[in-house]
Image (tube, rainbow, N blue to C red; front, side):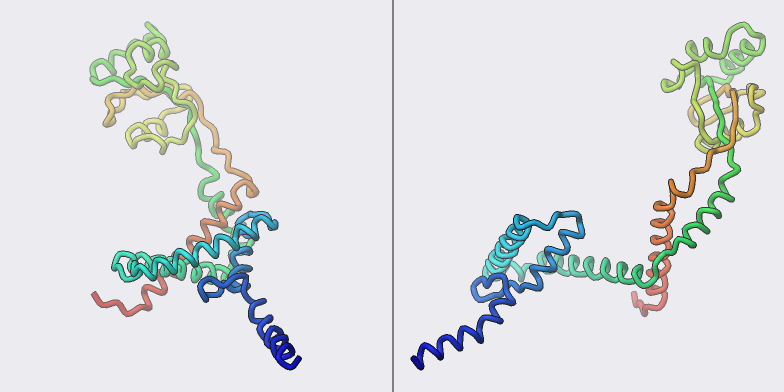
Length: 259
């Protein structure tokens, strides 16, 4: 009876220790804490908390320990390439954790997002976009001849674009490039668009690295600036990146670096 009582006492003492582990692999424990943290990580990434998930996590942790033990026994951890990769992985995890912690302590507020939105709107809200068409040819004399034909109404812009234009993207559409801001085009073309009144053709052909253009501005209109709700998330992410860049620059400036 005394021996049985001692055995029961030993079990009672040991039970809480085993309860802290989900498994023990060759004497190495997989703790309940590490198991729970793995589960929470997967849930935070969108995985549903189910018995199947928990069983899969348990099996995955056991498999990892088995394989890591085998790797250590085989001596692969002494390989310089493996050590470098391990160190880079460790650094990457620490950097991500540091930056996440910084953003948690320095969150971007909705007031900041709104202020940045108003700033961008003031800077870009008055920009124009243009409906443009063009005829692209290789030689200036041909460009001048085409422009003359259009002005003398010997042929339409569309006809001449389909016949002569070397731009495969617009020739079939009579030279139509659709709507775009002028700065979307190469510099000489963009200047011609900005300096040509809507409903008219540029006074002379314009040369770019692609050749010679006859440019017509069909219409123009103010750029429609997106509503706050449409871009608030992108602005918030932009501000986060700016905040992190400033933080990294500050740390770099304060560091003593010898090269």
